[in-house]
Amino acid sequence: MITFTHPAIALAWLAASILFILSLRGLSSQQTARQGNLLGVVGMGLAVVATLAALIMGGTATVGASGSALGLLGVVILIGCVVGALLASRVAMTAMPELVAVLHSFVGLAAVLVGFANYLAPIPGATGEMAELGRVVTGAAPGHSVHLAEIYVGVLVGAVTFTGSIVAFFKLRGSIGSRPLLLPARHALNAVAVLAMLGLGVLFLRAHAADGLLPLGIMSALAGLLGIHLVMAIGGGDMPVVVSLLNSYSGWAASAAGFMLSNDLLIITGALVGSSGAILSFIMCQAMNRSIWNVVFAGFGADAGKASGAAAVTGTITEATVEQVAALLKAARSVIIVPGYGMAVARAQHAVRDLTNELTKRGAKTRYAIHPVAGRLPGHMNVLLAEADVPYDVVLEMEEINGDFPQTDAVLVIGANDIVNPSAQTDPGSPIYGMPVLEAWKAGKVVMLKRGMSAGYAGVDNPLCYEENTLMLFGDAQATVTKLLTALRA
Image 1 (tube, helix red, strand yellow):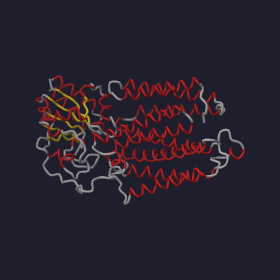
Image 2 (tube, helix red, strand yellow; image 1 turned 180 degrees about the vertical axis):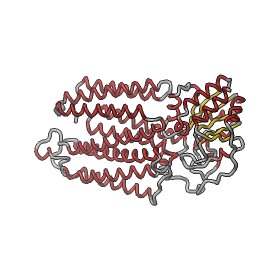
Image 3 (tube, rainbow, N blue to C red; image 1 turned 90 degrees about the horizontal axis):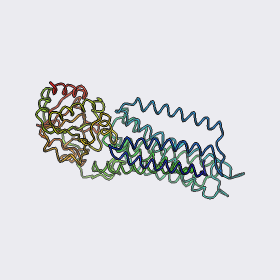
Image 4 (cartoon, rainbow, N blue to C red; image 1 turned 30 degrees about the vertical axis):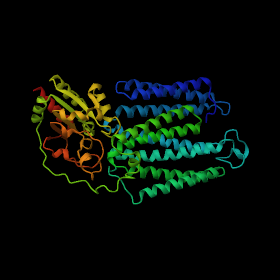
C-alpha cells in the first residue's frame, strides 16, 4: 500500500485526473469523441507510469517494491496490454456490449481481490500482536476501523459488479434468455440479503485478527448472489440501462479500491466513472419513462392496476420487393433512417451510408433517428455510424427528430423493433407502455427491414408491421440495402 506520495508523482496523478475529466467532456459529443478518447489514453498511460514510479520510490511508511516484484508486475502489465489490444482489434461491433460487460466484471473482481489482500496485509507500523492478519481489537492503529469499513464496502460493491456483469455478458451474448427471472418474493429475498450483509459487516468490524475472514467471505458470496439475482430479474429491453449501471458500479468499486490502497488517483478516477455512469443511467431511464428503481428491481413499485397482458396484435403484413422500395425512395423528398441492433448484426452501416449518400445526391433530405436505447449499449448506433463516416449533422436524437415524422415521405427501419413500437403509447398492458419511442408510423410510408417476424429483444410484438402504410422487406440488412442501392443507381 502506498501511504506517501512524492510531489512529482502527486503532480502526475493530478495531471492524469484532469486528462480523465477532459476525456469525459470530449466523449459527450460525437465531434470531439476521438479527441476525448485520445486524452483518456494519455491520462491512463501517465497514471500507470506514475503509479509504478511510486512503487519504486516507496515512501515514509512503506518500502519500495522489490526488483522481482516489479519484474513480475511488468510481465503482467505486458500480458494485459497484449490481450486487451487483441480483443479490441478483433471484436465485432455487435459484440461490443458483451466486451464492455466483461471489462466491468474484471473491475469488480479486482476490487474483491484488493479487499482481501488488504485485509490479510499486516497493519502498517504495527508490531507484535498488532502485526497479525486483519484487525486487532486492542491497540489497533488509529483509523484502522475506517480502513476495515473501506475494505468491506469495496468487496461488497466489487462482488455485486463482478457477478452482475457476468450475467449481463451471457444475456447480451444470448446464452441466457432476455426474459426477466422473477422469483417469488424476490424483493423480500433482496432485502434479507442486504440485512444479512449489514449484520456480517458488524461482525467483521469487531472480529479479532484473521477471524474476520469468515464474515467477509460469507458477505462476498451473498453479494455475488445478489448481483446475479438483480441482473437476472431485468428484462432484455432494459439491458442498455443495465450496461450503463454496471459501468457505474465498476467505477464505485474502483474508487473503493483507491481508498483501500490510499491511491488518490484511483479514488478520483473511480468517482468519475461511477458518477458519469449513474448520470447516464438516469438519463436513459428518463428517455424510457422509467425510474431507475423500476429498472433495477424489475418492476418494483410499478402500477398494480395495469392490465395483466398486452393486447393481441392482429392484421396482415404487406411484403414488398426491392424494386418497389427503390421506386418509393426515388420519389421521396424526405427520408428518415432508424437503425437498430439488426443493422449491427448484419454489419450494414457502410451499405446504409452509401444508400443515404445516393438519396442525398438525388435531392432527398436524408437523416438518421437515434433512440437512446437503440442497440444493446448506450451510444451503440452512434458508434456504428461514426465508424461508417456518416456526417454528425444528419444523426439526430429522438427528441430532435420525433416531430418531423408526419412531414416525412419514407422511413427505413433497419433492424429495430421495440424503439418504433406504437403499443408503447396505445397499449397499457404492454411491457413497454409509457416508453418514449420514435413515432415512425406517422410518416407517409414505413419500410421495415427484418430477417423475419420475430419479436424484438424485449419480446414484444410490433403492431407497426401490420399498419396499412408499412411495407415489410425481409432479408439480411446488408444484402438488402446493397440491392436497394443497386436498384436506385439503375
